[in-house]
Length: 572
Image (cartoon, rainbow, N blue to C red; front, side, top):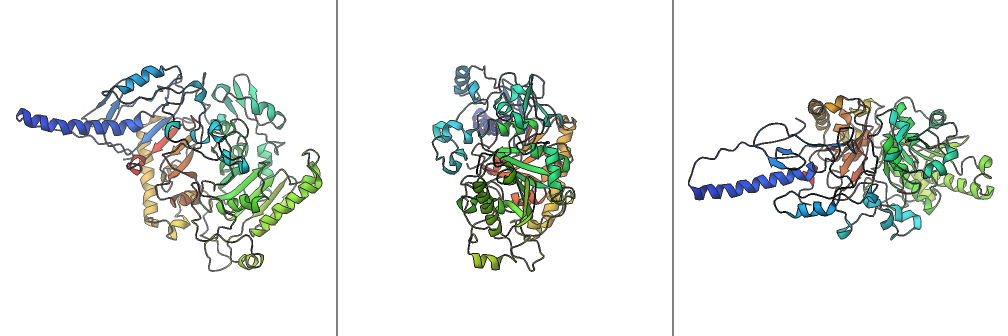
């Protein structure tokens, strides 16, 4: 079964009163511990399914050890084997009396309850807090990286929904329209008005699919890319969009069975990542600054920058070197916007010809130093390709002596690990035609085929047989979830899904035929090499330490899946 829930029926034989008291005390302690372990997860079920609910989220937690019935006002441990009855309605509207809630939580006989945060925290992101970020250096945008609160800075309240919040539109309608009350920002509608990113239409926001470099819309722009690289044969499945805006590029790639991880800083443009998530498009808060991106090496089939304003040519090419780390052998890097096609646009960009030409030459030089091959520059788009292996590059690097190979550093390490101006070496190959690390199959076959990292034995404790068994296990578990959660059968009920302990991505793989996407989180305390397997299957995800906040906005996910997360953190 997908959900493990155990209940014990106790039989106490008649005995004298002293023995009865001595038996009752440990029994009461066990009951309290069971209730506490359940409440740790259950009180986070803020989202409801009713139209009046301020959220549409639900959590599935599968390492609960006590069967408990939860109501808005009471919690009682049962001794029956009935399915838990959970109340999914929200209990943290901003109008809740915080003082009364704190007083209630101080009573020793009552479970701990958290009051609502003030209304101004409705978009609070703990580790990308705008006020806290001002304490950190502005050089290289370090202040926009993750900086999580500690000690007394940590809030102990529930983030409220903004006034007038409504359930988002179901997919695919949500790609093009959202409720203005859910993300009440007009900055982009003014700043990017001529670029057709977003516009306000009464009580709705509309996303026409435009962008800075998409004068004819994201669909037409992607078609232009498809003339340069193979977007339609299943060889490209995972993509990375740096400085994503409202993620229209990723939104329109989905119709081509390409799954993009889009990211942008917290406030480069107000709420751009929040808009993307409200649309039902994969996205997270992130920035290229001093830390590695939170993805493993050799993860993405394609990386993209459309006027993302990242200085690719500076800092010894550090940011392109990081793209090289996360790009699969044979993967593509696409650049549009300055300095590409500068001869046409230099006046509008308000820069000199000499400046733009020097920038492009510097980018070309960094790409050559990485042994990338320029495929083509056509109009506003330029495309480079990473080599399948480093066998033919070693002589070049030996002569150039720059950049050097990274020595001994774990290529997959990416949780507060600093970027370095050195090339991440690809796995060794036996001949120049071999794909370093092993070639993945085309989509959709790669979803269930044994990934190269598993077949080559580079994931500790995971064999090909174990991988296939895990895939089948999650098929059965998802079937069980469907049996107990009828919302799975409602088209459009779930769009954004989070797996808190993804392991090999089996849960996401079992949901691949559903109109949803899964953010596969691999905890830093777990087998971190598993995230590379997730990407080899054609899925997306990130590393995460669950003692910290995630790099996302509130009300991001419609369904949160938590298998054995509490077990992983039982000593934390």
